[in-house]
Length: 142
Image 1 (cartoon, helix red, strand yellow):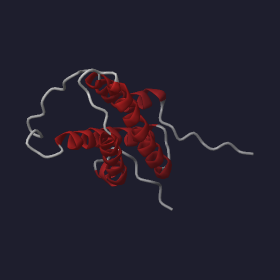
Image 2 (cartoon, one colour):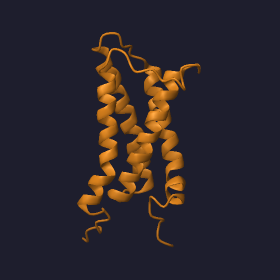
Image 3 (cartoon, one colour):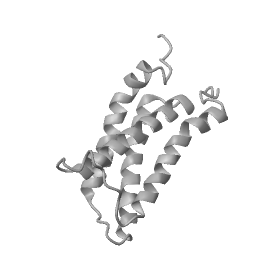
Image 4 (spheres, one colour):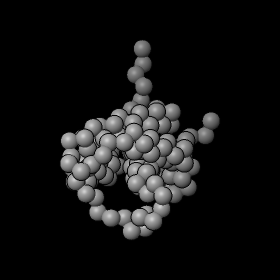
């Protein structure tokens, strides 16, 4: 039985790819711990502005995680997409559960739906966008 070749990037590169993901998650935990969030002047006038903010945050987070998984870990597209969407769902649920214990914060299933939507959109556009920007390697020719 032959082992599959290791397609992961060197450890230092993997760390650099995952660092922005970890930073964004840490910032999110910090924001979720506050009773009031800082105002978002650009979104304030839009209906459902908090859902747009959730989706946008998870879109950026999703792009960063997609790149780290593909370029750093060498995961195939399907695995990356599934883990990204499942991760967004689980993280969104845990974030809402955390907010249950924060005075002045509400728990909303619609926030989790917006989180997953943002990550799903990122999963759909990540590969062509990151290839175009040369931030993920193109697959070898068949």
